[in-house]
Length: 105
Image (cartoon, rainbow, N blue to C red; front, side, top):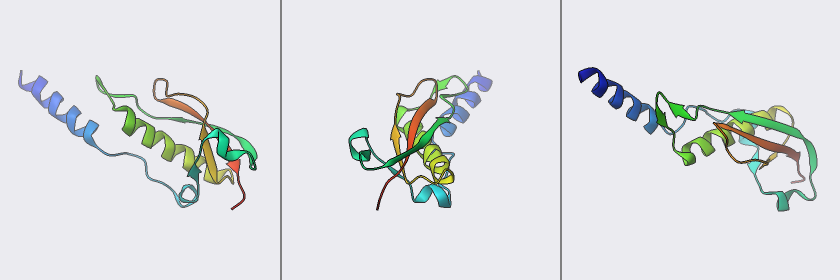
């Protein structure tokens, strides 16, 4: 019983963390947009962000997972020379695909 309680408390604390991913210097200049907003932009490619969809046996919250995936995609897009990302898929088992664009300022 004590072991189960310890695991439950640890899991809850880990799941409560805001995010394990920070935005890099390159990622700080990347914005999130939708498909309608990138008409005048040049597509550079795509990136697939991946994070943990569960901690131990507890499903992670969708909002936290989305924030983390967006941060990962922003970081990758910045490394690719992009300044805008657009989600191209829904989250599936902790993965999401994003289009990477270079848009005029």
